[in-house]
Image 1: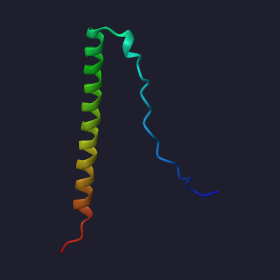
Image 2 (image 1 turned 60 degrees about the horizontal axis):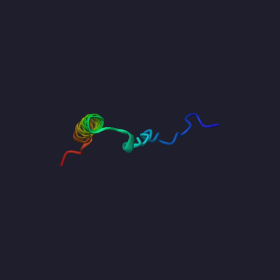
Image 3 (image 1 turned 180 degrees about the vertical axis):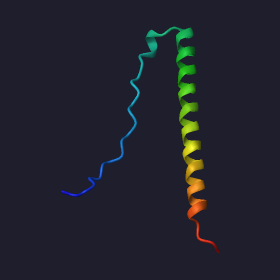
Length: 64
């Protein structure tokens, strides 16, 4: 048995699709607002990870 078992990266959980026909207009607007907030949260996480990656790349870059 290896000292470190390699794990496959976890995939994000899939969001369940709502039956939109059952929602009213106000509920659909609320749903869209929730989705936009979640998208903003994901984009912020991407930006933070990108910043960390750039800092690490700069630190380990070979001097020319």
